[in-house]
Amino acid sequence: MMKASRRQFLSDAGKTLGGLALIQAVPGWAFATRNPAADLVHRSSYGMGTSIRLSLLKDEFSNDAVNDAFRRLQDVDGLLTVHHASSALMRVNGGERVSGREISDVARAAQHFGDVSEGAMDVTVLPAMRRLGFVPGASTEGLIDYRQLRVDGTTVSMGLSGVGADFGGIAKGYGVDRAIEAAHNAGATAALIDAGGDLYALGRPDADRPWKIGIRHPAKEQDLVATLEVENEAVATSGIYLQKRTVTGKEVSHIVDPVSGYSVNHVVSATIVARDTMTADALATAVSVASRSQGQALVDSQAGVEGFLIYSDGTSFTSKGLKNRLQLL
Image 1 (cartoon, one colour):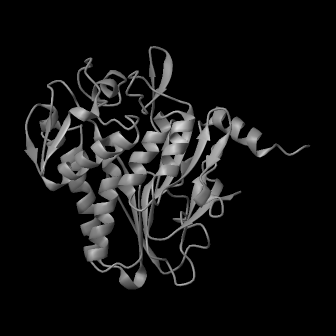
Image 2 (spheres, rainbow, N blue to C red):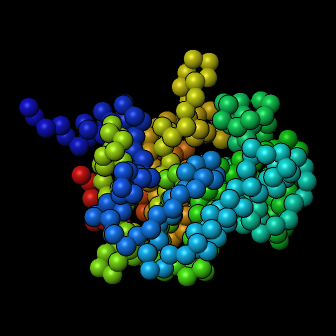
Image 3 (spheres, rainbow, N blue to C red):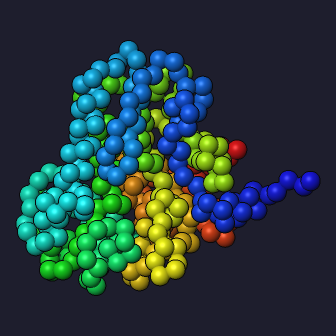
């Protein structure tokens, strides 16, 4: 039997599961896929709407590092969620002026990524997310325009009433960055934290190798289609398969085009490598919404950013800096 070409494989894969995902964990905590070191300690928790996994060197392990990391991420979740009416973000959506480091950091980044992506990354998609059923609350029509998000120092507000922000495409990355910062401050020199496909790899698990992560085979959940070595870098994946719902008889994803207010599916998976997880998270969303040419140009234009994108027609894009790092299996 003739072996299928990689193009045909990706095309078939896109039709089955909708693309690729950054592997989060396989049996044996093997997201560090090259013979996971015996001197790693792993802990898990839940936050930001997903499972969280933290790996630390056995010699550096401490309850403080674990607890501080998880607590920091959960604090960010509590402040920036759209699932609780009293969160800082929902108070901004309700018309208040709210001050704080976390909400101003993420709001300012949302403005930046809205600008550099020419609006493809727009956090004010809350009305659309409610209409599609991904976020609780009454379905209303509202203006989608990230430029209505205002930041004055550490104070955040909305320029117009009725505009609603959902930080789901950026806050998880920010939380991972704050969590890895907390673990490092508690003494960790090497750690890997993965929050549902947004991860940061600090240092090395041992002296002769960086962390090695996998990109999941789209048709076989426990298999890989590619691997990538990372050290002091973040990786985030956005994929149309990650959250789906059926709306009026049609399957839709959580990735929303801010122009139309409806789901997009031309990019089945986008994996972004960056210096920090918030950047990787935001750009993974942006390139999933942008056109093929705009998304590729966006990746190439950002310093320290690389990307691996899989399209619904079975083709793919690997940025120049990943060509010698990404190992297709």
